[in-house]
Amino acid sequence: MNTKEIKLKPIGIIHTPYKEPKGMPIQGKFKEGVTGKIEVFPKYQKGLKDIEGFSHLILLYYFHRAKEEKLIGKPFLEDEAHGIFAFRSPIRPNHIGISIVKLEKVQKNIITFSEVDILDGTPLLDIKPYVSHFDSRENVKNGWLDKHFKEGKIPKRTKLG
Amino acid sequence: MNTKEIKLKPIGIIHTPYKEPKGMPIQGKFKEGVTGKIEVFPKYQKGLKDIEGFSHLILLYYFHRAKEEKLIGKPFLEDEAHGIFAFRSPIRPNHIGISIVKLEKVQKNIITFSEVDILDGTPLLDIKPYVSHFDSRENVKNGWLDKHFKEGKIPKRTKLG
View: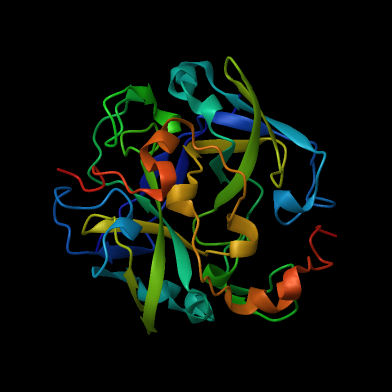
């Protein structure tokens, strides 16, 4: 059994208008007209070569405000409790978050993006290109979430209260 | 500037038929008929409640065999060099991998999955449900990759040589 600790380092900081969770969408695509900036630390800037050809990026980051760790909890979308691996809450065993964002502009070590659902000051761990040939799936079953998106509707609770 | 080290712990181990990279697809969806097993450590088993309702999972894991760190490199699909954040290579600053896999079965703390592109013995960091309402995007530009998938074709180099 491999239980050795794994050490990571921030490669940048994510700057957004959301100083607090209140008003932030549960997924960036549910709130238009908001942009954020990814500040990639200058020592990693070279790694951004050719990233501007992608329309979307997958950001991996550290939920720096999450202090708790739970295995069962209630997602924001409903009052039923689920296992932590069946929803996206920050209070999971490893506090890693993932967001798919829309790339707007790259200038030196700064990436401007839209579709923002990340708190200001979040430490960035990785950027991967979103590749439709790899990351899109058909015939998806979305477990407890499907009932909230019936007939293409967007549920009411998409912003944190 | 927040450069504080971040500590994570494995929450399980991923078991697959791929003892070495040779023969492994660059994305699991390019090779059918292969299954793997996720062994979630028993202390985290409760967190799997309701996960069986999802058809696909996003796995985050540690590239335990990656010893190098590069900012520029050649992806497996072509001989042109790109920035590390414009492709998916393990030799990135933080050795975190992401795979979307197909959930086949959950039995206690063991998840059987298909669409396998992960080496045997890989430490698991997190499981998130794949949610089509969150994770699918339209009008995607895939940078340098699009030319390899013209007219819906699958490129030849989809298995590691």
